Image (cartoon, rainbow, N blue to C red; front, side, top):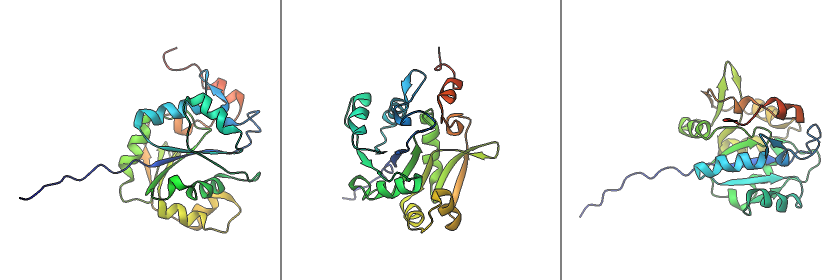
Length: 206
């Protein structure tokens, strides 16, 4: 008897929520800042829950973990980037060293100051990733967040000796990054200050 099997769906990327910044311009950690009446963390978690994508939250200090748990109503996976001068590249380095990342083939790099990204945008990026090294949203010749990337390219970037962050590492080690057109404004809406949160306006439907 011949058994016919169908290809299984690829595993979703592990989302690395980068939230280790000091949040100086926001007046506190951005992961707990509020927009549309809710913490950034709650918006991100709701989006990921709707897709059933796993997440690893990169925080600045261990005492932020219980606060995050209270916001999310569950205990999330977290790791700590305690480097006071740490940036996105160092947070990615910390996250890739965590046990949750060991067998993961692809990752979604989501800076916490872009909390209003729609689930459909993430689905589109994952679909378009294919054989590319990475995929980013774009609109009107402008690229945004998050970045979906394969493990091998992230490892190449974090192996860079640069102290100038992720952008420099990407310049030093070019990769095949697909720019995916999207209409969602969330990937291009960087909420750095309380004023940015006010400018985001009311929640949809209000």
